[in-house]
Length: 258
Image (cartoon, rainbow, N blue to C red):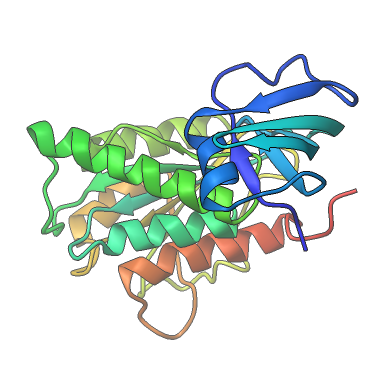
């Protein structure tokens, strides 16, 4: 079974390697020592959220302070091209369900999209609180799925801003895919940048009521490809994670790491 993951903020892990010691404290140390009751001799991973993983052995536990010995340093880096999900805001926490599952499937970033048919609206204090909730959801999902990378949650955009991102992604050699039930091209056959390309694949998922014809036209004009996942209409909480999983498989991300 893979070791549980704990997150260290900032650059504190940058200069550590095999044989070094590290003190896991604060909220993560409390979670390991008090909540999970980890003990000396057990193995855990500490990650920086940007692709660095330290495989460690617990030396001692003193309440919320866990002393670790680094066994191995693994620089996993960032997968390329990166997978970004533009998820329309949705009611009933369905958007949070989507980004949670998409994190587990391998998404590298999220763009909250205020679509025309989004019932939920992010404005003022609500926007800041809702984005913070997305960040917390993604962080927890990354740890649960044992990832060394915590996906970034970008600032929310309306359709104009999303079209601008689509245009930039395409200009940089990436791909933008709009999931749409009337599309004729399956996601398994759509054009993608080559594996290893330093660019982005942006996947756009609409809200419960679907993407409007005007939105599809604006995104297509910016360079996006309408694609379909399959013969069935999926919930907004389901479509994004399945698309990310399908793309991760196409890109070879689900193959065992060397």
